[in-house]
Length: 250
Length: 303
Image (cartoon, rainbow over the protein chains, first blue to last red):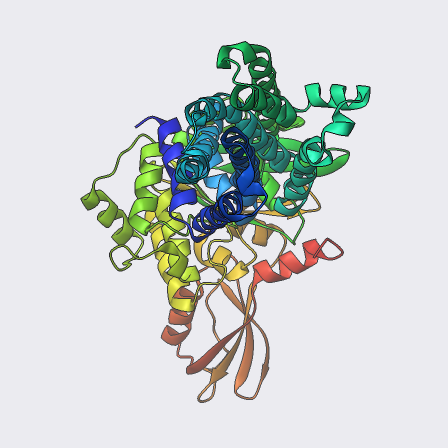
């Protein structure tokens, strides 16, 4: 079997068979349950237009996906280094790029698991309307590079800092910063600073595109610029992860 | 030569980790790399495995530069790092199968069972590694290190935390490997392990090799012997004859202090004492030559 596939399968096991990975999936399911329950049962939120509900769920799924990718991304390098399981991998006769790509594939599987986990919740929140299919497609197209980008960032940070705790802290601060325009609302986003921040922030780029597709019913292909920006983000973070991984020693 | 390091230096940032390390290990030999904490033993191993670049000097492992030709070296080298972590959710069988695939040596169930028995590890079927004891983990790590059927095996503190039986069994395995022509680089704090197993030693202090060579040669060159306290059940034979590998330093009633030359095996020497009529009833090791040498060399070093 190809080394990339062997490592990717191991990474999938880390998520789906280890107590730590399963606990995280359970926590994600609980968070999605809570949010979808709010959308359905809360007096004000239940009045939201179906498209708004789908958009809200997609944003939450992307945010939680990025969080999970950060946790698993930090663990796959810094965590393994701390536990002493990284060195046996590094001294196997496998090119570092193959190990790296196996681990990157592991991050992709984390997002795939999150996406699959979220499907019933999305259906519960927005199954009654017509924007669900658009939501699913645009979440796959825009969410994938964003979530993978945060996972790669976490891998690179973990490799550089060599400490799970430090890398996790830094990445969570970056995720919070990226999410801040969403939290702060539209008034700040209308200012020049807000607009610039919106264009350089991969999370808001993806959310703006989701907004355009799901709420404004624009065509998915019309969001090619946003999509390219998210791809650029994942490309930069991939380079960051690769560079950090090559510096990893004992 | 399996490993040849000449005057290597390793820097990390502005810090100089290794300043002048020399090491040579041949086939079938067991090399003991000893030194205080922080002396640079783990970095030396990392340099041999191509995990850190060398800033000066030369390293050849199996005739290749391990930094530039790491895949060649890794395919023929087994290693057991000091902190050898495992995937706790796997079973021993899954773990070996995983590394077998990585080494492009897919293992059948039978081969996995054979490799586990080679290291005297018999977990319950499907037993997760998270339930393994320290000794079981060490054995599993050794089984992993043996997957490539290596020409060279590098072990960092392999007997740490093992009970006496586990230690003895590991010694036997390493001696069998050496008898099969595999070179073993053993990095340890336990001088007893070195004395039992190694034919060559290197002592590292503050990133420098202060002594390197054959164990007996090193001890002889430093005028160090193995010192024993022996108890007699009756009078010593007249004129106190003794084998030429031993010298009697002093005596007090039924006790004698005996020095045995570094190259001699103590059990052979005691047999000769019996043959000469000495009524030995108790033999107590006072000081090994290696211990005295180690203490002298590392005095003032990082500990």
